[in-house]
Image 1: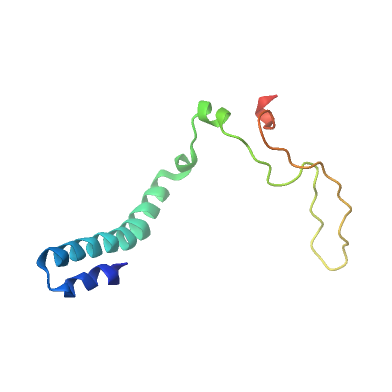
Image 2: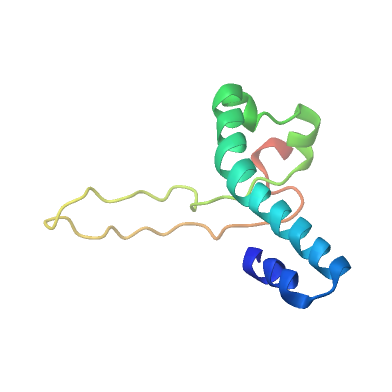
Length: 101
């Protein structure tokens, strides 16, 4: 995007060139300074508070199950066989979260 916007400088029209320079500078600032320096630094300083969620919102949001309940993982190694795991299907929708009971 920086190259595309910078190519507007070659258009010969002053207004288009100004827009191109401004947009190229904005994209460069956003991509390189904000997203690679400031955001990771702020997240490191804030620490666990990055992932804080208000209780009221936590109750409203669904909790999707990443794994079926009761599913177990086999121990690592070539000598182990895959266990015969029969788990219930993952349900979604109202009333399916553990907090709604």
